[in-house]
Length: 126
Image (tube, rainbow, N blue to C red):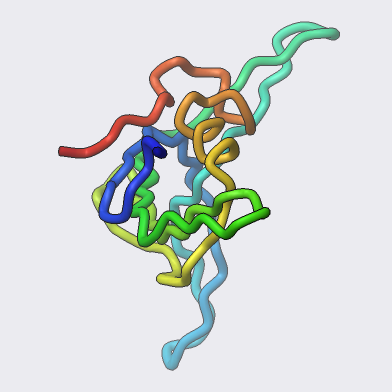
């Protein structure tokens, strides 16, 4: 029995940065400000740095299926989208696949660059 099931929605606070992006359209080239998930490292001493971001958004993962095949490691199929600090939802609707242990690492924030902030622990949406 797994603690993961189809239909579960998990949300996690995610740091975002603002970037200038060059956009080409029918009006020509222009620069727009855009949000993207991530952090930057600021050097505070010659041998030390600390993380920084411009805002906080949300990463949302919706479990589509929990698959168990005899003799294989179980897999979680899920879709992911992001919500930037202004509330805009974006992200490709493709299906993603991971193991339950990797999904748990994302939930508990024991992997990746977001472990700088304890607020980034995921929780299941109700």
